[in-house]
Image (tube, rainbow, N blue to C red; front, side):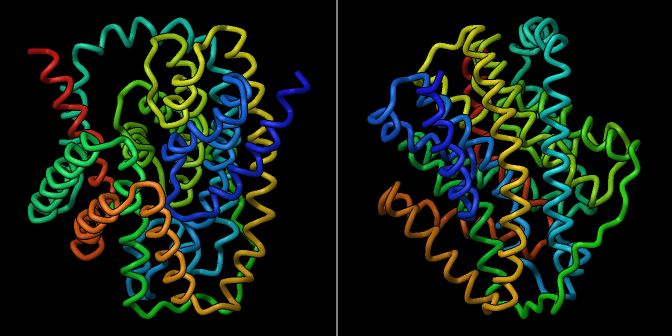
Length: 398
């Protein structure tokens, strides 16, 4: 087992670095598989990827919440993390996601026996209905918009992002990075450049106390959403969390942050179990692991231990990295940081996907900017993955 400590340690470092790079979603780590296989045998390589994915899911909340903040007039309409940041409570926002992630991991581990017996028959039942369930999810997300105009724009975003997803992913699997980055990360950063953003002069570590019942509700909601993402292909963390919160009838901004943390980390566990139990990978990490190793019960135990160790490290690393990041934001012009981040992301897109990747990114940015100015949910951009999956299952059922 000593030979597994090196890839574990490298995964901790690799995941932390990748997590600090905006737009480098855990699903994008699959692009590093060929490089890692040159250095390690399948099991150590799988541990490195899994560790990096778990740590990335924690640390990536730092750039997600602390970069791309809006101007003061728009605070009430933005994501909960940005709202807390603009109130000088960026550290609290990050801490809420960490609490949710740790709670989601614990919830997923405790529910393993139930998951083991229930998921295989449930999957066999919903498998022929997958495309209809995805259509139902997309339709429901569209109808959650508050006006007919916004519903129409939401539908257009789903169709346009779906068309871009079909074309780009059929061209090459490497397009997943420019696709997700251009629809989600880059538009937020670009719009922030042309707006007057004024961050609080002082950040505080003070935070509101969370009731135990509220904590349990948020974590269980996020963990339930993690099961949804583990079963339904293409459904993102934010979409699943919104659905779960609608079902539970509860949740504000702080609850949402805890739920997002819970769904992100619990999804890693559920995805590995889904790969073992039903032979289907529902996340980039699970796909990467499934490509290099055939999972059995012994490997599942090793992977679960890996996730626990990685989560413990990631929770500490995330909180430790948040403080210097907030200090840096106060010392360096916020617009300059966002411009540098955009240039870094475009460079990475060119490095991994070439000119075609930049072309996909250009189209994706034009679609991803629509939610910024029409005030519809950015989660509709997940049509880039959901629409191709719906069409695949529809064609398979004919």
